[in-house]
Length: 145
Image (cartoon, rainbow, N blue to C red; front, side, top):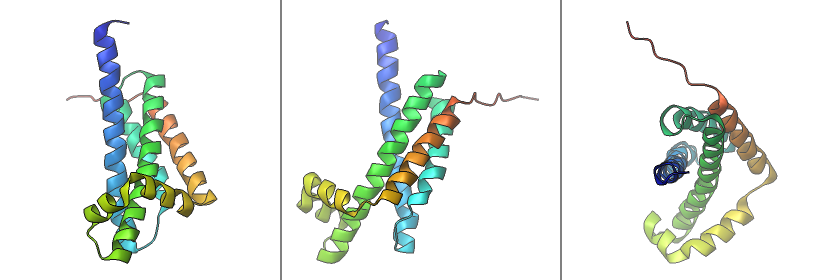
């Protein structure tokens, strides 16, 4: 591998992580609006991440599938941490950022682990599989004219 390829792969990894974090943050909006967790949203999130990563981040099949699965896993974990932060914020009358800063990552991580259930894990794994399968498909070619 050349230095250019290594830098390209690292950039693709960074893009996948950022897309996963963004998907988790967007996933928080309907969750907070409806006042309940929506673990089934892992499937559309995985589908969208698979398309985005295959179209714009990486052109190779297996690399795109791996990056899409990673992005969906990050989104699934991040939404759980964000839900925990929102719950702590609501219980303590702190703002969202103050609650996250006061609790710290280790406490948020522990509370997230306590609150997660087996169906949540199944939905997340299903979303990861969907993301990998969608990213494996070749992108549609665009015809002009």
